Length: 249
Length: 178
Image 1 (tube, rainbow over the protein chains, first blue to last red):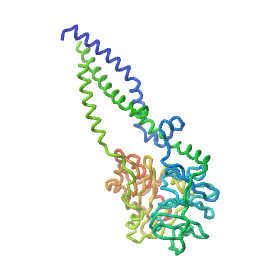
Image 2: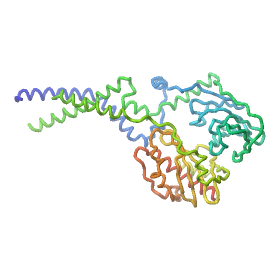
Image 3: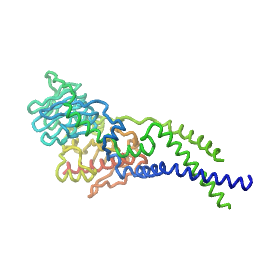
Image 4: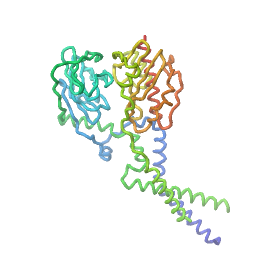
């Protein structure tokens, strides 16, 4: 290659290099900032920080798999949205498998799922205890009913009653308890519960990760970000070549 | 030259995309051992009746310091005979709770078992090479474990959760023994 051609080639390459730099500036800044934050996601507890905002939630189409289902225990609405349990409007427990019964027993509010009993203080709705299957007779829970000093529990393996501490169970020969059917809560309650449920639908970690990987914007942004990656490699390659040529001069 | 570079980069990227697209799908809840079965094993078939430990007052404050937040409930269930106490505890790993069983004997961890794992990553904590590290661990006056537990790359939060639960089990054991 003659000297003139080489110079022209280098000039052209430097123009391309500058252009690549300008085009890639914004994506690279975005990648760098989100990358640094994600690198410290555990320390910053990004998974425990949530983003609110109806626009974001609409963009992500955050909605539960099922509509809220509720039971009434005295004056208290016991509701479940996906796996989040609410007592009236108070978020009470997470990772709840379902609700099939709820009742008041002296100063306790008891909610049952197929796999556990949840005991709440009726006065302040604070969770006293979650009683898992290891503490109960075998089988899934079907229904509960407080009866005087004892709590009647129907499980798939049989009918039992429990003492107040739920540490002692005895088999019963009574009739089966009535099985409650959860239903939709009143509309105003359902709206409030959904609004609260959505607040923890989008973690900061998820948002930053989607920005970082390009998934946030549109379905095209992923291939565009791939293209940005390729162009970055070209930016590095052209920069390396240019600096080598300049060094040789 | 520029377009040669472009073609080379496109080929490399194509191979990379193929490689990463063959990754496995995320795991659902993994039940490694039913809690009831763990209790049967811990007490060799003679499971004592459950007892209840109330987490109030100073005990609650101490437990909060150990796990970094107030305990989820006011009461904690446990099983105890003359030799040992057994605790089935839960703690959030990254997003979802991990259920683990702890056997405490003579104020030392005898065994740690991951019973139910719900996260999509970090299942390595269930393996013996991790849980065996806890055997013989005791609690210091500052409610920390006496043994150093090695972490697992990619399972940092799960490791933290199990460490906290081990310290909590030892603390609860000291409370019921006293």
